[in-house]
Length: 152
Image (cartoon, rainbow, N blue to C red):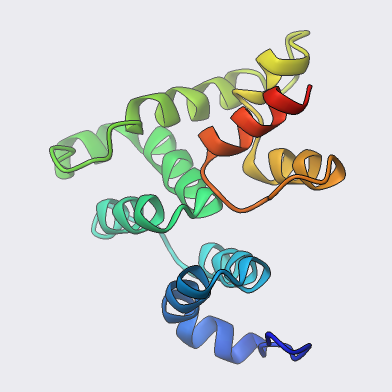
């Protein structure tokens, strides 16, 4: 992959976490992002794995996976509250959940623009804007927003 090859879809699906781990360790951002997208698209999030996925996403700065977990938590709030302990959750979990709630409320848009809008944008949108501005696209939601605000 590092020399112009491509990871097959089968390899990505079967080994997404291992590929993310290796790509993160060796700084191969494009491979990490590709494996992360595959993991998000092929993983069914439920109350049994939601905390494991949240902790993994946080430890590897997998913003897309973390966003998917937050969307699940917001959509299944009562079930999650009854069955999942958040005592080991990363510190910024509350702000991530609030961003997911606001995204749900603002689907039609409320006139927010610029820096205010960054806070509720989906990761794909933040990464696209960062890419267009020549910024690094790998990293947490907070890192992307900070970089975009610095460049504004």
